Image (cartoon, rainbow, N blue to C red):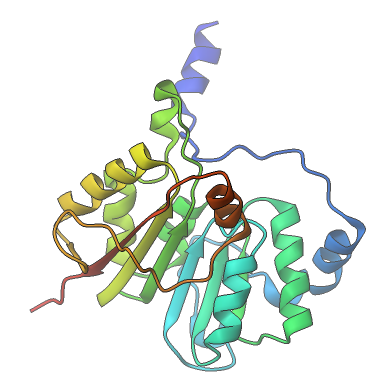
Length: 233
């Protein structure tokens, strides 16, 4: 019994649960046919983005892109930018691969791994122009709040990966989580609120997700935050 307890305590707290969602035939086909071309293998060494992308350009990273709708739209709308999507769920990765091929996007790559480990090991400090976390799991029950992605340690790590004057954009439709996000970001010494101290971003510049549109039909509010990394020197 004591060995099991010790193992549980040493296990990292994840902000997600791998769900046993079924892959559609087309998603599985996309993983098989296109994964080798558009999925960047995870390793504990920083990614050489100059070798990954065929063009140079600002680097945008979206964590937890779900089924990839907003990520695909951003990559299509900003062809001079490079995009890296981080997602652990195979159906979302398969769907995004389908979109990359259908839209003929050369500026989008995917890494299928835990986002904290990707930021810590696979992305170099001062290398990201924009980091997005749109509608992460709110883990609404109080006993699950420790699973929330947006915590001081994560934001400190994320900010260290931003270039000076790079931005981090968060969004949620869970008001209590939005307030926690705001407190965590305001407390991070590397970041400043682009909008105004203690203020949310009322007119965010991003595609509306299907998840967000469904929530709005149900009367849910949406809260966006935009913070910029302080310039050094």
